[in-house]
Image (tube, rainbow, N blue to C red; front, top):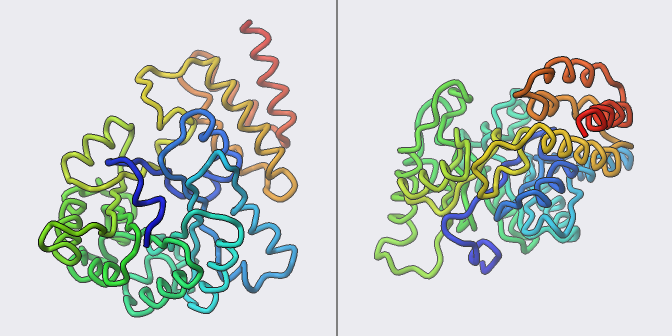
Amino acid sequence: MESFWNNLPKPFFVLAPLEDVTDAAFRRLIAAYGKPDVMFTEFTSADGLVLADEGGKRKLKKKLLYSESERPIVAQLFTSVPEHMEKAARLVAELGFDGLDINMGCPDRAVEKSGCGADLIKHPELARELIRAAKSAGLPVSVKTRIGYSADELDSWLPELLAEELAAITIHARTRKEMSDVPARWDTIARAVKIRNTVQNPRGDASWVTLIIGNGDVETITDARAKAGEVKCDGVMLGRAIYGNPWLFTARTDTPSREEKIQALLEHLALFEELLGDTVNYATMKKHFKAYISGWDGAKELRVKLMETESSARAQQILNEVVARLS
C-alpha cells in the first residue's frame, strides 16, 4: 500500500509510544522543538474505544488527540478481538490519522492477561487476523513487537508478520521475558532485515518491502544513525531518551541550559493543562520533573517543591518565580 512510509528518508527516526509520557501535550511540544520523521500516540485500547460508555470513550479519545504539526501521526491500538480492531481502525481512519500500529510487544501483565501485547507472539494466527482487521479501514498498518516471548523466535515469528504485507514492523531487540533488564541486541535487528529480504525481496529488486525499524537502548540521533548504518534497518525508534528532552530529534549536540529546561517544562505544563487538564490526572506530569529539573545546583530542592504541587498552575507559578530570580 502506497503511504507516507514509502516517502520517508533513510534512515528515518520515530518517536516511540510511551504510556502516560508521549501524550498529546508532550507530542505537541516535541513537534515544536524538534520533530521526528514519524510520531506515534500512546497505545490505546481498541476494546475501550468500542465498548466503553460515553465518558470512557471521551477519555480514551484524548489519547488520540493530535495536531497537524505532528504529521505523519500513527495511532497505536491494542486488542485481541479482531471485531474490535476493525471498528476501532475505522474510528482512527475517521479521525484522520496517517497510519495505524498494533502493539504486539507490551509486557504488562494486565495487557497480556487479555491476550494483547506480547502475548500475541504466542498466537501468530490471531496476530495475523488482527492485522487483516486493522487493514479493513484502509490505513497503512504497522506492528510493534519483540524478537520473541521467552526466547529469540525471530526466524518463525517475523515471517508470520511479513506474510501480511505490513507497511512497517518495529522490533524491540529483546524478548518479552527479558523486559528491559538486558542490553538490546541489535544483531537481531540485522537478522530481521535479512529475514525480510529473504521473504519479500529475494532478488533484491522489489519496489516495495515492509520497512524494518530497530528499537532499544538508543540515546541520541547520532547513536540512532550509527546503529541504522551498522544493521541496515530502514529506521530507528527512540523512546526513553525523550524524557525531559524535546530537543532529542534535533541535530544539536550541546546540553540544553538550565533556563531552556525550565522554559520547556513551563510550556509542557501549559499544554498539559490546555489539552488534558480536564481528563488526565495531574500526577502523570510529575514523572517528567526529574528529567527536566536536574544537572545544576539547587535542582533537587526545586524538584522536591514541584513534586509537592497539586496543580499545573501551582507548578508554573513556582517555575516562573525561579525564572524571575534568574533574570
